Image: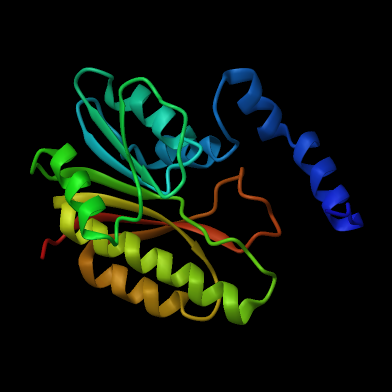
Amino acid sequence: MAITKSSNRWMKEHFDDEYVKKSQQEGYRSRAVYKLQEIQQKDKIFKHGMRVVDLGAAPGSWSQIVTEWVGSSAGRVIASDILPIDPLPFVDFVQGDFREESVLNELLAVLDNQKADVVISDMAPNMSGNDGIDMPRSIYLCELALDMAQQVLKVNGTFVVKLFQGQGSEAYLKDVRSQFKSVKIRKPKASRARSREVYVLGQGFKGT
């Protein structure tokens, strides 16, 4: 594949990025860990002994740090992605598309028919640069995450999902607000300034 000016620029920006360097120094699998860390510092959503489901988990940095917060013996982290991830200590990983019944059933089996305290999703589509394609794909992934949260979250549970602002995002937020007592928008410092990504924090799941 030819190296373009834009990909060269991305590579330089990536390797100059303070959060990329920090993640390498601290042993986390990606810079995304600092987005969740900032949300945790502000909102204190993860507590010792909690059961957490991490959707779109690859390469695994969110599961890594959540294990530290919930405790490797007291808490439980169940991660899922269509991509494989290298094994992580104290993380149960289910590979596959959770829209498929067999994958969903495996995930529910790992949960041992118990409800989760928190569902987190950093899922994002492969961006084409075409808003008309990218936004519907992004919203669809957010809807899938919300649907999963409805299935596995306990009453008063918490939901964190990455959302790209644009066509369809307000309607999605309205849907989240109908299902949670409190909904906040977070834009962590580790989110690149030019990115339209924000994180939606739903607290106090009303139950189905």
